[in-house]
Image 1: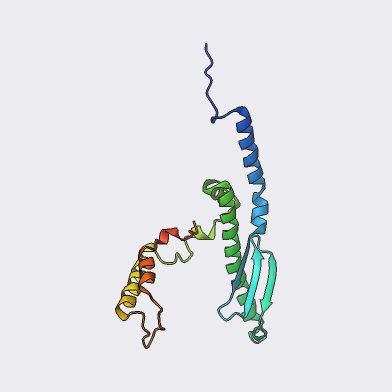
Image 2: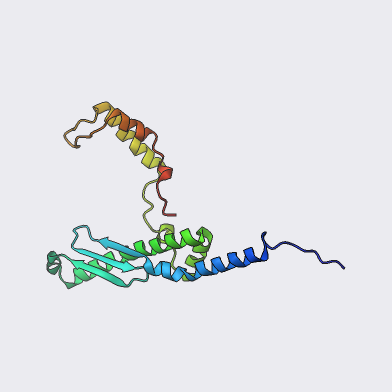
Amino acid sequence: MSIEHVPVGGGSTRDLIARARARQDAVASVEALMAQATGTAHDADNTVELMVDARGKLLRLRLAPAAANWGPDRLGSLLVEVAQAAMREAVQASYDAVALRLGEDVTYLIEQLSGMPAPARDPEADPGITVEEFQRRREERLREARHTGGTAGPDRPALAVEDDDLDDLDDFDPATLRSDR
């Protein structure tokens, strides 16, 4: 009977121990990363603005003087709505920070374990526009800017468009923009 030696993951035992300790430290820092994340939101009229952390703790609240005119029911529902938007931003920011430290796979596992998925993965959330729609709108704007020479019209402000600027826009790649995972 012979015993076969199979390497565990490459490197020396010291390397394996160092990587295990680094991973343990990174996992231990998750709580701190999530505690540091904040989200800020305000209503369309800037009557209410608040900041919360990823756990929903209120960190800052600003009410405009006009908030006194809203009445308790409307103001209460507005506060809840704005707080929920700020909370989504804070949770997403916390997962983004964790993903940078631990990687996407571990972050997804944390989402699953916590029962609180990242807002960017929420199937009910507004997905925004697709890359294709962005490109289509950009091409329309470029065509119009070239056609009008960047001049103002009755329903649009003047555009300061130089030929060099148009070349820069032709080379723009939306894939370089930050993704919300």
